Image (cartoon, rainbow, N blue to C red):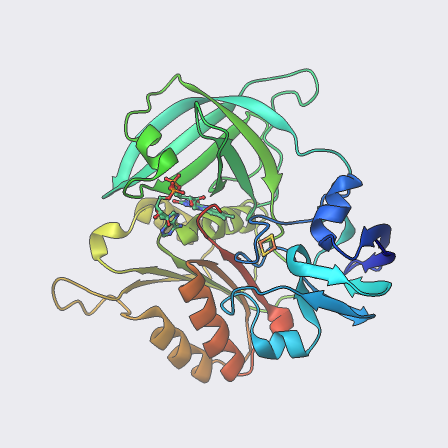
Length: 344
Ligand SMILES: Cc1cc2nc3c(=O)[nH]c(=O)nc-3n(C[C@H](O)[C@H](O)[C@H](O)COP(=O)(O)OP(=O)(O)OC[C@H]3O[C@@H](n4cnc5c(N)ncnc54)[C@H](O)[C@@H]3O)c2cc1C
Ligand code: FES
């Protein structure tokens, strides 16, 4: 079997070199050499491993068009979990070198310290990391990142974004929408404070980018606002002055949560505008913004500066926002997204 040299060039100008056989995908080959690249699903459906080939030949196995359009593919974009080399390759990654790990993602025990309902079928959960010799007590992560939780009595893991900011107390705050028949959802319906869970992370490259003082627009669908709230909390803690907007999209008004926390954030970040976009309001509601994509289309068309857009939620929401933003001139380099896809 032919082996080829893969050179990954990260966004900050650093490189990682490893070998990959023609029958291997690049993500798995890197992992076997303990080069752990950002990824989630390993099956072409989440988009976390997207990169772009600048030199060399390859085969790309089928992947979801929601994640990698035919147009993106024609411009050399690939999903590393679906890419097989046919020659040596040079590949550019959208993330910096510090997002690559050279040791297994840390696993730690955590205890549920709070669990409460914040909207129908939606729980806020706070986990407290137990101190250990290697990691101490702190919960260190970048706002926008997620942790994985092992579903008790199974070998399955589920990913959850963090709502809070990095802290010394080991606290991990999450908001989780319960899914009918869901493996972890079924556990959570009966979970109690004091129960222990195995967690691993932090993971993910969906984080705040420093691009001067360009406005930041955050668009979240349902629990997709969770990592965006973490980013806003970081901005508040740092006294950030970027103009900022949050679009919180739900179908029904009672699905909104953290409204008091958002009001508190607005007190700390006076420049922050919050728009609640309720697509199917039960009663005529003049305060709501309705369909989030249409609201965004109107706002972008009226905006004098093209903002950085951070979008998180279902693949459909991410695709819709990406389409509208691109049509209205927002360059791909100003679009950052995370999809809450189901585990493979
Ligand atoms: C990076 C990342 C971050 C995430 N962060 C959050 C978060 O902050 N809050 C949160 O609530 N969820 C989040 N998710 C989704 C979460 O990981 C699980 O997919 C979800 O909680 C369902 O797990 P489950 O075991 O209960 O259901 P499963 O046993 O995995 O699935 C049960 C059923 O529900 C469907 N389903 C599963 N997940 C979804 C989904 N996201 N949307 C629609 N249908 C689904 C499945 O197709 C299946 O039919 C995130 C996912 C990713 C990849
Ligand atoms: S890890 Fe490659 S698309 Fe999800």
